[in-house]
Length: 268
Image (tube, rainbow, N blue to C red; front, side, top):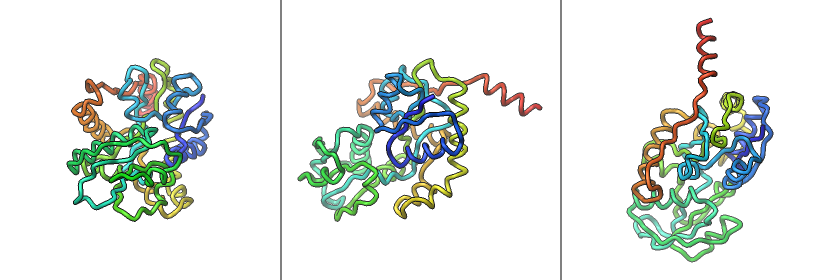
């Protein structure tokens, strides 16, 4: 089986966990949009799919339960303000490849700060290119962002969502194509999630100081009640902002055979 994981620090964390678990999964690394395309094209059996992508086309995916990518903070996506928050931003430069981050930035600025800047797309290979645009604010996204030190005020999108909604931000689901999720896939993901928690401390010691706190405390692997509550808030915002025409159901796929096997083990 092939699994498509983002070519980002969170994606690396999951890839290392899959290796540590010995799960029979061959890993494809790509940007989030390409991971989704790999799943749709049949190049991958499982993919880490951006939350917004799955919400827009829920009929295309089997969302796996138990595992997801969520965080309390997210140092890889920041809004950089030219001035402090006392001066309203009239314009914001962004890289249009990062749909989830762009939408979240729009929501946070409007709901949390009462700002509705005009968004200007920038064809940028690096986050620093977005900063070079003459705008009141810039949205920078990428693995380089934690190491960038802009002179002006910067807001962490993950932290801003937590302060707005009081829940961690759910960035992605693990998904298969509709009707194709199997118990074997679920078991492999379970093993990876378990290995991720067992190896988290070691993983946090092998990264830079900028990422130590993120790996050890902020990065979450479970599709739990906090993640569900966060998704409920997020879906409502998307509906009220007319991003979604309705609030779709995102019920994860179930595996009765696994539940029955676990019940038999508990009874044994």
